[in-house]
Length: 129
Image (cartoon, rainbow, N blue to C red):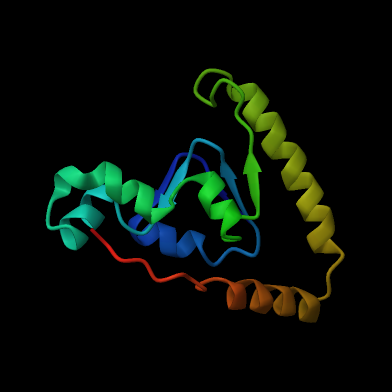
């Protein structure tokens, strides 16, 4: 299991991506490249980072909709303001998933992992500005 607390980026994002179950706090972001880096490469203009961030789909909601993130942990007013609530929700979900995973055979776990990664990467072509 993997948990994205705030920013999962760069090479660390690649490591996060191989988890069997990915949880992400709702205000976190997760991407292999920063929006500034993306904008510099694609638009040749780092000041277009805001546009790039939107195109990148790096929010918890976006990644959950794309089935890359399995569960979004609600933060209420924010993890930095009320960490206890966010940590209680994390604990609850961790326990729930540990029970589920402990009931799987190795072969079933491998098959679930295989199916999960077969679904990632389907995309719709988009013309960039």
